[in-house]
Image (cartoon, rainbow, N blue to C red; front, side, top):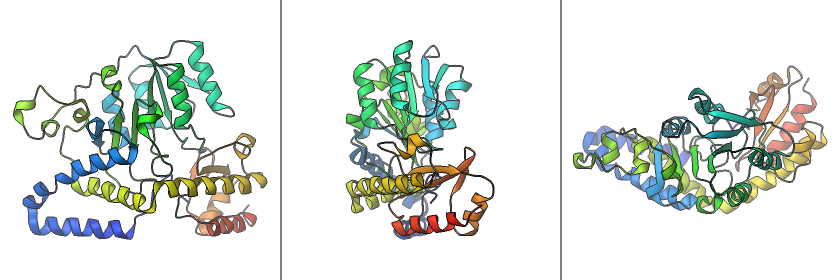
Length: 345
């Protein structure tokens, strides 16, 4: 129950990775040069998966690096609104660069309070994680589309690392300007791969100066003609890592993201009901209309160690214990968790 920390490795992906590196062993540079098409395949696959033109997609080793590169090109006078306790790789890059940042306090009624904060004083940038990493509170793309309609000039930036792969996401319809994610959690793509999606309007809000040989596909004549999305790809990208993401996207598509989404929402409701009835969730989460598949239960002392001793893989977060459920978790897993919790301190 730890996908929020790390997704598992699929046996088919393991076989693909072994074959890829065996080909590298035999083929050397010829193989690697030939495999570069995997990068464009992955970009196009991401475009289909999230409904975003491939030309507005950047491949990055992880969300954190992409975010830091991006903010180097944002006007430092921008007023930024974030959420209290949101993921550090989303919030710290604003703070370290001296942006004026206000926070919406965590807790009940988060979405209405975001709207209130946006109405109170001028804000140029809203930066949020679609799923809060500690307690799993969900900020839906539907809500952000409403925000876009009410504040058309607002730059909306979203971290989807705890959302993408667990739920369906249509970027073009979301109202989001910048969406980034790492692929090693719910997308099940392993480490070393991530991506950034950009709306057409987003390019006009940034002046990103990063560049390198890979930004021009090794074409020296294109030094002054670098597409915005390639500013985030100055160096060579690993075909093993991004090929792994490409494979993982295919795995989720084979299952059907509609089926994955539906299953995870049903599992979320079951976990919400069971843990809520046992007094293990705050009221606003136990009684909320919708939630992600991440939950945080109290740690009175010794409970985490007890779960770990009984092979429940989870994470200590925010003073509690974070449990996360993906499409490979079943009701039997939930029943086992409840049985072990009964004997916990």
